[in-house]
Amino acid sequence: MDIIYLQQVRADTVIGWYDWERTQSQAVELDLEIGLPSARACVSDDLVDTIDYDKVVKHLRAVMAEKHFLLIEALAEHIAHILLHDFGAPWIKVSVTKLNILQDVGRVGVTIERGHRGS
Ligand SMILES: Nc1nc2c(c(=O)[nH]1)N=C([C@H](O)[C@@H](O)CO)CN2
Image (cartoon, rainbow, N blue to C red):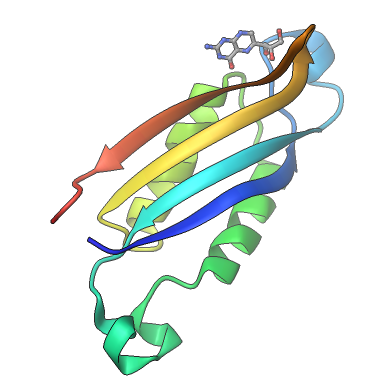
């Protein structure tokens, strides 16, 4: 399976379990591995034959500006759902990282995989 990857995508969102996190947005970082439904674009050289990563980033930033989650797990699940159902990816690996949210911890996050990874 061919994979598009996006690393260290910064996006602002309101997220957190505690009340103090729900009054303002914070930057989180996304790392995505997006399975492609086919390798057609490798031969056709045509953007319509693949998943447009520019559209993915714009869509996710817009969703995250609107939608609020308590847990990074729930945000990761929502992003996976969008990639599988709206963008037609057969498999997705999503990491959501919070930056400097814990004292003396630079990065904390979650990684989930959804869908079926073909060969
Ligand atoms: N497994 C998780 N643990 C915690 C989360 C989370 O999203 N998943 N969130 C928090 C707080 O919101 C944190 O960002 C600040 O303490 C705590 N634990």
